[in-house]
Image (cartoon, rainbow, N blue to C red):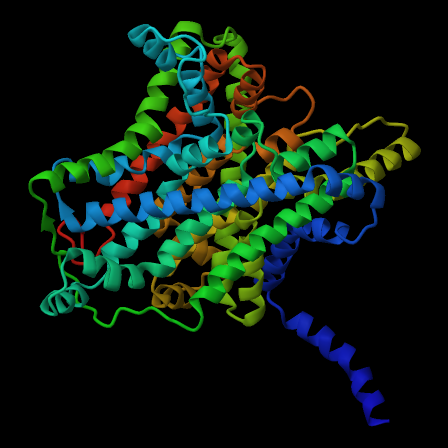
Length: 565
């Protein structure tokens, strides 16, 4: 009887708890639900039976998907760690010619989409390209007289993706090195440890979370990659999802492939967490002074210049010059008025996604500030998980529920009013913007949250005592203070959307083309020179936020000569 009474009282308590929820908590839970819907849809379809198609995939292409995806992840992981960590240590702790230039130049490859660098190097390194043609002219070779490494291969994809993605590791690792206390390094030096032992035994362990975070971001982008691996004819899970959905017309099988790819992502995150164990990383001193730098002399200084210069030249300068040369000599024939729709579509989608992502990030950040609880913190974690999910997975997870909703809306208006409303959700840019928000909300949230935490709570209290509501405080007090961070978050999302390809290809409405899609379509038809125009436009858009990001990092270290504090 007592148990029955307790069970009957559960629902009134649940109703009372829901009434006590603030509007901010309800809003955060709603955002978390909408962001998680695509992932939940994909996971739900994993258990839907599709024996015939799945058997066909398992016996034909699935082993190749597994091997290529695993090889790509492993190779790119090693490449970005070597390039990112090594260059970060050199520019922070060593003095050599061009060091200040390399601090920001090493971030420039972030402006180059992975598929763009694949197009540029394929044109440059192929048999009929300028490099092999020059070698044949110089040495009198003909076809079959020499061996040249194939760029359109797994090894070529690993090399090119590493050149574009290493800045994720460099960015976070450099920030971690800049934040390290000089006292820790001084203790190491008094114990007789030279630069190499300081690097391997002190700096690396302290920066381990940042290094792992940067590597995780790079590997997420590797799993998300579509344009480059499709162009190189590499069968990975991302290309398999696209082929299964549009080639075979099998939504369930495509969703199940997306579920397997999602397991890859979860496995990466789990491996990193397990490898860290219970270890925690703290700075034991609050003393921050200018970090001691080692003056490199002789051959070491030029090796440092080469080590920092090669990634910049190969990852940005050479591809940009190749794209510029191709664009000027034999660029897109539609350059002019016919090219404007591509620019308008790209900019309008990127602007809408940037505004939406920043707005949602502000609501989430401020909601946690006003109503901190395990429930709201869980909602934030769920909302920020989209960046770890490949764009192809998000696209599949969006098409299924929105396609069903479109059918219901169409049937309703057709039956009740005789109106042919078409596909309101999947036939417009709504699905695309939704995918971008799911994918890039974490980018804006991290920037906004970091800025909001610097606003002292006393400002909130003072504003509330003056009669301002929570919304008024956000609008009148916090927004002006966070203006720079809000702009930076919006710029980052804008550039990411301009470069995004997998979700755009899958979700774009009929006859709707962006710069990324235009570049991909021309390159897929082996018209690399024509694709260079759209590719170069994407690169130019991405340069500005990269430079702004580097300038902000330089002023980020307490005690730095460049810091304002």
